[in-house]
Length: 66
Image 1 (cartoon, helix red, strand yellow):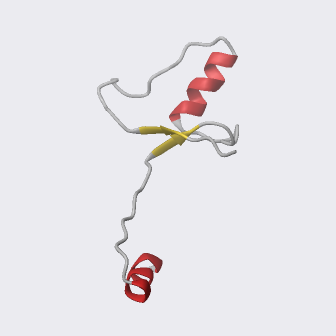
Image 2 (image 1 turned 90 degrees about the horizontal axis):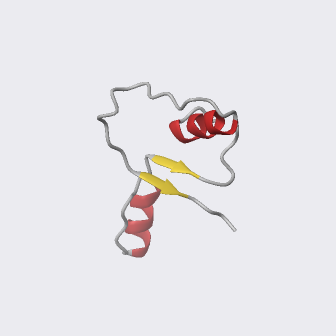
């Protein structure tokens, strides 16, 4: 693991963060995650369809790379 190697080499603490759901500029139209599905439906003036009961919760992070 690069993180572990960096910690050993430089003696600094490291933490790995995994962003489960990111969305924003730069996400390709071919992306099939929930935000792109919602966006495509909204742009076509179609209903937004939930493929779950709507009970689940998740973390979302808006990304903007300038």
